[in-house]
Length: 258
View 1 (cartoon, rainbow, N blue to C red):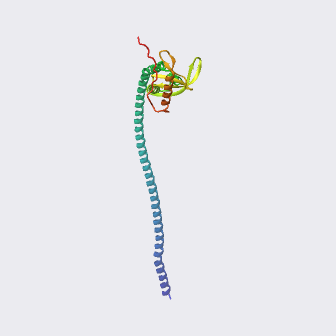
View 2 (tube, one colour; view 1 turned 90 degrees about the vertical axis):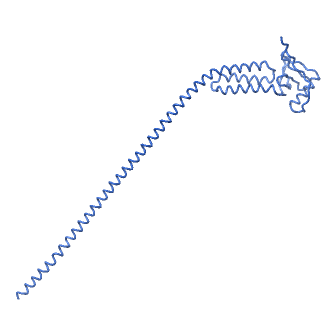
């Protein structure tokens, strides 16, 4: 009777002693998992911080390198700008010298241009009286041109030279043109014929009267009937209305030389 309870008690104690290690092992496992989980989480957070620090370092490095490159570009630009400024200063100095030289040239050339216009003016006044309005107006424009500050010396010279060339061409051409002539206080419409600078004639529109300009006397000399007919033919030739032919026209009388 007493043996059974002892055996049962012993068995119970054995069961408890066998179950205890299982309970302890489960608790330890749970704690180990928690520790491992915490460790893993801590490692993850550490890695995140490391990544953040690394990213920040990379960004800082890129910013630094970018600033370095920007500084290099700025320095190169400043060097180039300094060279450009130096070059422009040299060009300005050279332009100042040229302007000074031009001013000195202008002082020397302007009197010469004035003399050229004055000479042309006298020449037109002393020449045969053909195209008087046109030629006098051209000379007057040149006088006005000399006093204009907005026109360069080169342009003034060009226009004066052009006027000289026009006058020079008159000496090599045959020309017939319409105009007016004053006689005995009255103006008459006539046709002029100019043979270079050698002779100047006119013929009335009706063709019944002609005259030759006599420079030595400063007046018109009436032509004969035969000379009038020859002049009519010469005018037609000048206007290309008739084939050129040999004509006999009177020439101005030459001044007697002393």
